[in-house]
Image (cartoon, helix red, strand yellow):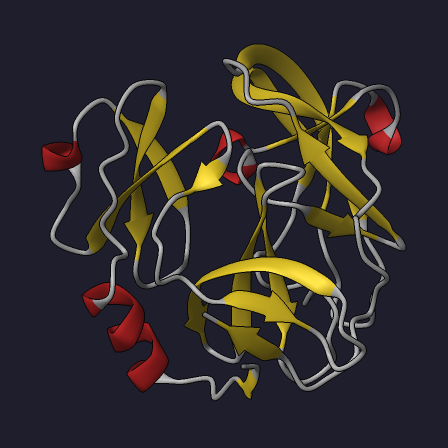
Length: 206
């Protein structure tokens, strides 16, 4: 049975109690989920997580917690599974892309400032190859009208000459940014398995 999602601490607490910790066997990925900002980092052992983080794991098929709700939009589009909510945004894991996406419960779209996506370039005036911070490797990002992602590979050290940052009016100002060696990942455009923006309200079933 599908039910409307109420964004707040009660749902987050429910997820923690009902199986947010999952220790898959075999080919699994261990990670620490930062409760304050939703960032993920890969670790070798759950004990590596800090007090402000929740330890999670998943295999190549995606998170395995049985009680985790499946998320749909108002038109019945399957969006993914729901790890958490934070500050009015819903973090959804998309199994087919093995990535997370933050969707606003107000607009049904990706909030351009959550997470804030800074693009790094190896050429001046934001030209050349574009890169993002490795901390965003697990998320689908929105840049302009496009959605992008990185591959789950080790970050390379690159010389960066310019930087594009999100502006309050939707623009992306470009400025000089000199760094001889900064760990970054190249990004590429990706097609989502559902239509954006999604139709509100969200629904879930479990």
